Amino acid sequence: MAAHFGRRLRRGATTTAVAAAAVAALSASQAPGVTHTVSGDSHGAQDDVTDEATPPPGTPVTGDSPYYTDLPPLKSPTPAGAAPGTEGTPGGISPSGTAEAGIPATVLAAYKRAEQTIASSDPGCKVPWQLLAAIGKVESGQARGGRVDANGTTLSPIRGPVLNGVGFANIPDTDNGAYDGDTVYDRAVGPMQFIPSTWATWGQDANGDGRKDPNNIYDAALAAGRYLCANDRDLTKANDLERAILGYNRSRAYLNTVLSWFEYYKKGTHQVPDGSGVQPGSDTPDSGSTGSGSGTDGGTTAPSQGGGGTGGPAKEPAEPGGKQPGKTPSPGPAQPPGKPKPPTTPPPKPAPVPVLENAGTGALTAMAGRDMTERVTVRVKTEGRPTAGQEVRFEISGTTATVFAGGKRSVVLRTAADGTVTAPVLEAGDRTGTFILRATTVAPKPSAVGFRGKVTARSADRVVRLDEKELTAAPGTAFAHRIAVEATYRDTVAPGVTAVASILTEDADGVFVPAEKGPYFKGPDGTRLNILGGLTTAADGTLTLPELYADDLAGTFQLKLALVGGAVLTIDLTVAADPAPTPSPSASATATAP
Image (cartoon, rainbow, N blue to C red; front, side, top):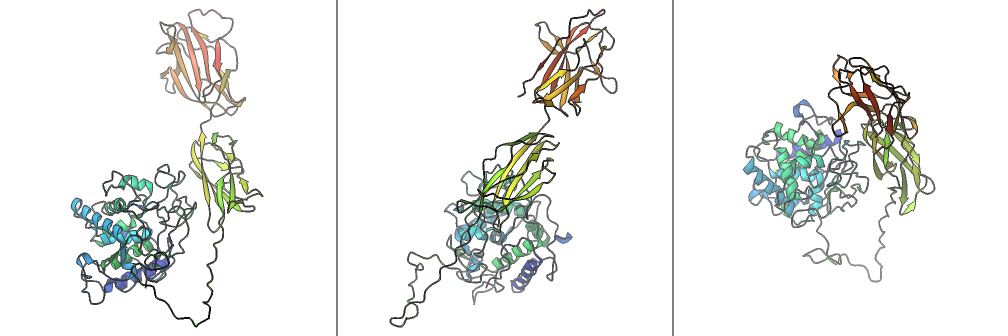
């Protein structure tokens, strides 16, 4: 009977202890060879990675997603009378055995092909197919019991939980939803549960269809095998083996669970038809829009077809009418004449789950230091009807300083009678970049909607001079006046806007171009500067430029002041030995921002 403990635990000392006991019992009866010991204390062991088995650096293959914690039977699956190590047929495939020892035909073929391919390209690694089978069992229940087509592609996508930092790793979207269907956060995908960013590096085309598909068991098995062999590992060495598995999921409980199945499969397995393999317990959480659980298909969790967590044997799919294929149904116990059959009680209908949806929220964009005009509004429905009084949590994540009004990054509010609820005003903060606002129902089976926002640089759409003094200078002297301006954005002062001042000269065609000679600014060390950057408007939107100097070149020049946002001001400069006064300075501003 399969040991089963907390089917969906990601971490837990008790799970580690049970797994350690399973490995110990399995190893005690195995044939001579390499024994893969389980590190850690089996009595209250902590699920921490010690120096004995330090994981590789970087993000794990699965993003530390949860995994199935079902354990194999403590009794060897070898049929009675079979010699240890033979299991009845070459390669250790027994024609009979417990349900848990059965691996769907296409899935098993993919594991073996991956072993053969790597044996040719990386013979020093010695990756056994049973290790791939152990990881596939823990990650997806062997592709949900072998629900794959003839090419090895899962009949529906397998997606892990949303990696939004709530109980799992926080991994913002890296594939624009191409693999996991989520454009806000990443999710582990496929029967071997690769996160998209890791698949981008390790993805393989093992079945020759021209695609690297994480939901294809041939592609995923080869990718997993190559990852396990990275860094010149020799998987017959216990330390290399542990580091390889911990690179998949940095959890000692995970390590021990995988090793338990590895030892179990080394005792012998048998092939079963695709779709008839044992799956983890039927109380697996439904993923839906919440992303909870590992190895789910984005909303449809396959029902358990056996005892992979309940201890019962695997059942063959029933034919129409309830018949088992190839079997004659038993008539069952005789009923006394005239006595009706006892009534059957239908299973209770599952409680309806509130579903969250966007209620028309527009683009979340604001300039740094300003409030966003758009507010996030969501709606909760239960069985298609608005749900009042449902608690919804709004959370902000990302590198910007965006917060809700009052400085909070997380608030919980209740829906109104129409099922809608609106988040507080968003304050953009001073840091530019993108952020994510995620709304989640506070419920046993949460539903979530994500929104991506952007904080842009401070800008100005208009800039004007604060005086009308003419700007003239004799060659080799400083200009008599410094230039002072005021910047605004939508008729309000624009503080913190960066600007660049450039000196222009008129060419032979009458076009003003950057000048190499003529008026200039001085740098901190006295360096001549014809272009001066790093200018920023003050809190009141004003900016006073540094002092301007004239060299020995006389003539008419222009100073161009360009601000972020599109506001531009040009001012005439005159350098003459005896500058003649002009009626008024020529200055113009454009108030058009892109």
